[in-house]
Structure formats: C-alpha cells, structure tokens
Amino acid sequence: MEEISVMEKKGFNFIDLGRIDYASALLEQHRYFDKLLKEKVERKSVCSGVLLFCEHPPVITFGRSAKESNLLVSECLLKEKGIESFHIDRGGDVTYHGPGQITGYPIFDIEYWNIGLKEYIYRIEEVVIRFLSSYGVKGERLDGATGVWIEPSGRSARKICAIGVRSSRYVTMHGFALNINTDLTYFSLINPCGFTDKGVTSLAKELGCVVDLEKAKLQLSGLFAEVFP
Picture 1: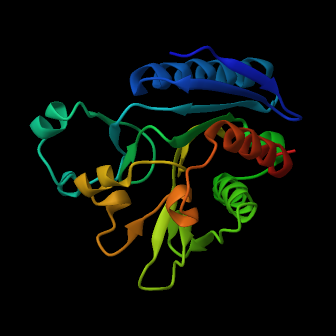
Picture 2: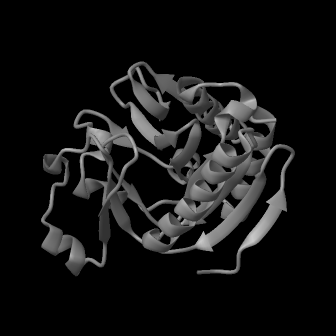
Picture 3: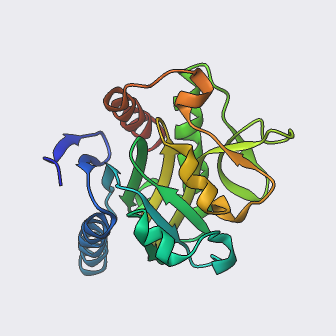
C-alpha cells in the first residue's frame, strides 16, 4: 500500500489510498463502513463520511447479480495472468479494476444529504459527467443501466464508468470505477456489467492521449465536494 494522503472536504474527508490490492482496500472499506454505521446507531444522528480513492492491481469482481457465464475465461487462466477475482456484496454484475483506473469508494451516510439510494447513484453519475465535460468529453446516462456512457443510444455505445453499491441504514460502501488510462484489453475477459452488445472505453482512448491521473483525482474529489456539499 502506498502512503495514504488525506484531504478534508466540505462535507466529508477524502483519502487517497494509492495503489492497493483489492483485499486490503475491502478491509479499509469495512473499517470505515462499520465505524460510521456504529456511530450512527449509537448516537442516533447522521454524519457525512469518507471518500476513498485508489488504484488496484488487475482484479475482477462479481456483484450480487453476477452470472458466472459473464466470465469468458477459466479461473485457472486468471491465476496464470496474475488476475485476482472476488465475489462481493455490491449491486451489479461483473467488472474489472486495474492500473490507470480511478476506483472510488464513498463511505457516506446519505441521510446527511437527505437523499435515497437512487438519488445517491444519480449524483455519482453527475460527478463523473461533470468531470468528463471538463475534458471536452460528453458523458451520459443510459436508461435502465447505472454508470456513465459515451454515445449511449448509438451503435458505438461504450461505458466509461461502472457503478455498484451496497447500503445499510443509508450508509454506503463500494462505489464506482472510472477508466482513465486503463488497459482496456482486460475487459475482453468478461462481459462487462453483463452487457454483450456494448463496449468500454477510457478517457485516454477518447482523448487520444495519456491523462495525468493525480490531477484527475483532485478534479474528481473537488466535484464530489460540489455535488455532495
């Protein structure tokens, strides 16, 4: 795990975990999630929470509604390639995390903002849409599918950000995966989010150049502070 950087935002703390293996990041999530949930139950009051950013080594995760058929290779082949896999309790199907991707885990008490889970996901999408817009890229929503897409209604519809969350007593965990400089060849190992007729993309692919990841993290965390004031 790299050195953790912490920045206090208006309504929550932002922590950059750097590059960290998925299992360790999951432990960090549970640590903050359990703490926030305990404080909420014991104090009977709401508070904001913490926003975790990180990068993972190559890993494939399966959500609660994932179908094993959406993994297109054997578990043995994943091991040969050094790719870990985890079955977790977030919503959604199968997705990939890896270097060059900003994976964000908002551990938020969304009652602090007086919103429900649907609005919470909408706001995460809004953060990403505003972020992409700052690079001249038009991100959009797709009816019936969470996340952020490029040209969602066309034949070349492609997903740039996946979202899958879990909540208990309005306290959230898991979150989003935004492809910045991600090696997209890894997505050929799966049907991303269960889709067989849509593609995936990254900001670097859309722009045709590598993006400063550290700058992108600061921009994205700032937008979270705007959308979750």
